[in-house]
Length: 85
Image 1 (cartoon, rainbow, N blue to C red):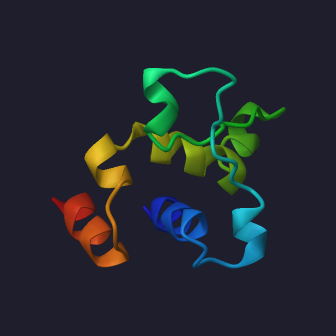
Image 2 (cartoon, rainbow, N blue to C red):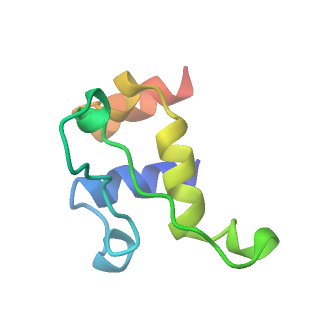
Image 3 (cartoon, one colour):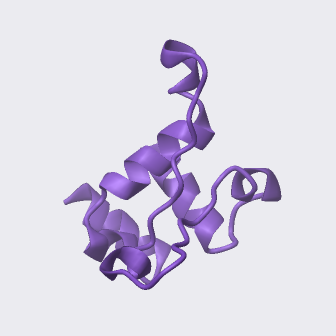
């Protein structure tokens, strides 16, 4: 849950730069329906057990698994409310 909040803050410029540097928005080379769904790039890890727990790997996985209406919440307060329900 903490990874999801840090992801939202990073995407909105509210987190420290070292968090923002770990997350990369997914950009497409052509126009597809998923272009505006705010997906993050999921990095590959070398180590299955410890590498998948790293913020740069776990945060995009959790973020991409959220429904679109939660990912596009305009404020942190409304994001928290929708996430809890």
